[in-house]
Image (cartoon, rainbow, N blue to C red):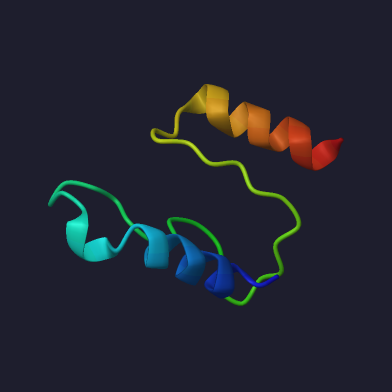
Length: 59
């Protein structure tokens, strides 16, 4: 499934209009046209989350 379709599903459930002003919503990194095989969802990205994502991509 493409990234843009996944974002649509998420935004149908949690519309951007209800986000707080300081919230980062939508795609933060990558391309909307990319095929998605796995999803790692987090509230705050930090080094630990990036390391986990990298481990899961490699394995």
